[in-house]
Length: 295
Length: 282
Image (cartoon, rainbow over all chains, first blue to last red):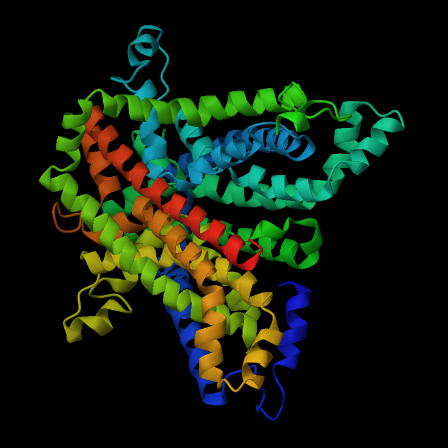
């Protein structure tokens, strides 16, 4: 990906093959073959299986499955949840990276660690914690019930669990980049008379836009595809609290495989589009995305 | 430290917005992450220490924790070996389709876990593309612990490749040339010069893959078969306990899993600190 990596690659491939810094030809073939077979077997084959299974029952069955009312409701809910969770995490990511990258304060590294915390938590636990708080027998369950507010088995719970699962995505792209960029641009803008918000919108934001987009794309993919966390808080009410991944599960468990894979193929398409945007950002704007872009 | 910050907590700066940005960050972090996780610990604490111990050493819980941990360990080991080979092939050699495959390494990050789960099950079921090849050999993958391992290999692979790849890209070729000049053959150079340098990255990727695998749910439950004591993973047992309204038990298993993943992350942290001390970079 990085251009710098290509130069030594070219050096390592002399036509004679007698270089001391590469393996002998048969070893190279074996290593490449192993890598290719492993990747095809574990990554490409499952992806291919999704589409093959989706169209197994024919085109009309495919379109029937994705336009059926419960499927449409699931697609709507998924879009709605992502439309709330992703912007929430964008605002958080911007605030957190502004505080962490532009200032020196005590406890900064602790804060940095805490932001990454949700990545090390099992998706099931991401849902469980909200059930413990807001579920019927949770800490606020009684209060919520007496005020007729439903969080668990309803939209707010699904949104909360999704926000938790996608919490670090934007912040972790922005923090290292903004730290790298320093505060000189902002200081220049401020000394020329710009207000704080002007500085942020006209100087900082343009400087980080590609990294922001990168984080948003990854955040969105996870938000739309999150399964474990949402599964715990959703209640699986068909047509109401089922997101797309949950709808896939229900169809699959009903042995309606063609329909399950049809809806799954939409999510697989989302994954492919995500990868495409991610790769093109990495190729085109490598220098404007933080060095720590790799997971 | 104190001198650097003066009497306050923050070093003076010309940039505005510190209070707003940090205030928002801390509030949001507390509401979404810290307080809910606190509720988890608090709920499992209602059991008391002995009660907590009783839950997580109960035969079914212990079996599920053991299964989750052992299958994750196995999958992460496979990923450490093959992930390193893949990173090596992608960085060192040029072959047709290299960039495409490189791009696809991130697929498990982008593909929803439930989709991966049903796709792998379709492949490895006795009548699937791969399952039908293995069935005559007497190898059953789907609905056995082996299926769990397959799913965990899928979701863990990018962690190893993506931590080893950048280190390999920046590897100083002069070290290899020096080794060769000093009379080492290629095998000695690779195993005694290069692999030791790559080892911290491989271990980091291994631990990250392991931490992710221990908590994984979506891709596993379809292929696992979910038989108590045989193929029931810990996250699934949490959901089962929740559906029985045994909140403290669910919280206790959750807390135990959290402790396992924190221990793993601490391990990563130690490796990185050791790497910095030894190689002068992180």
